[in-house]
Structures are given as structure tokens and as C-alpha cells.
Amino acid sequence: SLALLVVMVLSLAWSVGGAGWLAQLDFLVPVGVFAVVCGALLGVTSLSVVYTLSIGAVIGTAIVLWTVGGEYFTRLGQLDRLLALRDELLSWTVVVLRTGYPLEFSPWAIGLGALMWTTAFIAGYTVYRHHRVLDAILLIGAFLIANMSAILTDLFVWLLIFVITAMLLWLRTSLMTRQEGWQRRRVNENA
Image: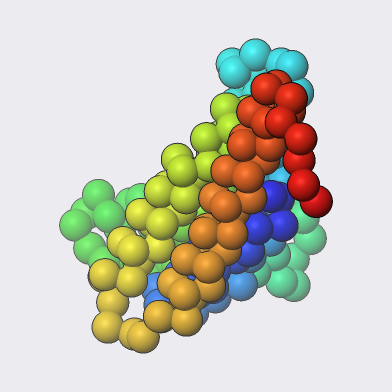
């Protein structure tokens, strides 16, 4: 299930990258993979929702800032990357408040990274905490369709990969649910 969920999120990340919203979007793939794994791991713990979502938000912030800083400021050290991101965000905010068009792209990248983290984390968390696969499929699918609807680039391959993996994930969990029902009713399973 986790592998299928990761492939679904990868198809979303590759679709957003293929749309070309920004020139540098390679950070979306590791953000999506880390988010699904983190959501799944926190989903299987017995911690309350308040703690798991807080831990996920802190980890997500760190990973998004780390990956975006590594993508946009490759020659700087870790602390200097954070400072450079802060400086670009401040100048971006000033330009936006003056109703201009900002030339800094790292704040847009941080926003896309945060959206990717949130989507993938909640999908993994929903599958492994609440066992609601359809909710995760609809969440990732809505993001994928919104991305495809906003551009003219042909991204049908990523939609096809998403649909195939989503159907396999749904089939797998459906069969597991039926198997649990068979075991409860003591139905003799044929291999």
C-alpha cells in the first residue's frame, strides 16, 4: 500500500513539475516521498491527532525549507540558505504589498512545497490512521486534476499512472477488508 501511495504522489509531483510553474521544481519529489512516509509512520502510532499533526507540521516545514533552499541556493551552507530564503521572502512580500510583480521565485517554491507536503502527508495519514483509501485518492486526484486543468501542457501520462496505481491501491485494500470479513465469519479461503 505504501509503495502504491508513493507512486501516486510521485505522479502528482511529476505532473506539477511537467506543468512548468517554476523553472526549478525538482524538490517536489523528495518532499512528496518524505511526506507520505512521515504520514504513514505517524498514522500507525498511538499518539493523538494533536501531536501527530504538530510533529508532521514541524517535520514538513524543515523538509520544505531544506529542499527549497538546496534547490535555489546550492552554493550556500545550510544556515545561509535559510537566511537567503528569509531575505527573498521579505523582499517578495514588500513587492507584493506595493502591488508589483516580484522577481523572487523561492517564496512560490515554498508555497508549492508546502502544498505538496500537506497533500501527501494527509493522504498517507488518512490511509494508515483511518484506513480511508478513497479519501486519499480523491485528495491527490483533485490536486492532479487542478494542476492539469490550469495549463495547456499534455500531462496525460501522469494521470494514467495515477489512475492505475489508485485503482490497484483501492483493489488491494478492498481485498484486505473482504479477507478480514471472511476470517471473522470463518469462511474457508481457497488459495
